[in-house]
Amino acid sequence: RERVERSLQNGGGCFTTLTYDEIMEDISAIFEKLSTVVTDRDRGHFFGGIVRLAAHDFMDYDKNHSMPLGPDGCIDWNTGAGETGADNAGLETIWCDVRELCPLKDLYDSKYATNGIGRADF
Image (tube, rainbow, N blue to C red; front, side, top):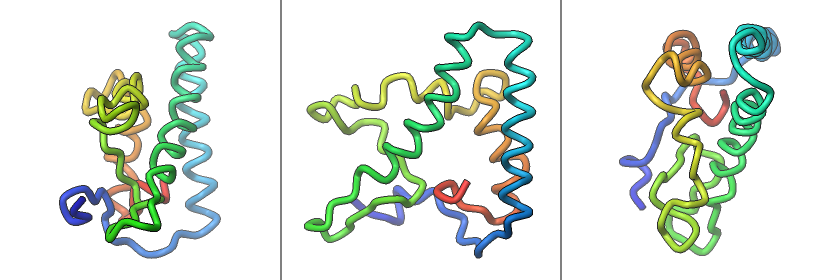
């Protein structure tokens, strides 16, 4: 597991509570927009997906491995559940490159990645 190949970090520094509040406001705006166009199930999938993305990022920590990983902003889409990637099923609809389908990633790419905030911090 080469960290260089898997890293999604941008190498930025710390961010302030102002930035944290701004992220929360932006995610709330996504929620408001979603509330008018999707079902409760879709909203649950989206917001549950945010929690799953964070959990799947830090749960790959292995203190016995030369590259212990952990909360580094990386998701290996092809691991888990017997290395089939089944543990990550559905997350590709939360974090993808299709702007209309993945507003969280669009928000990150368009506003926060350019400010040096790594995915693990976002």
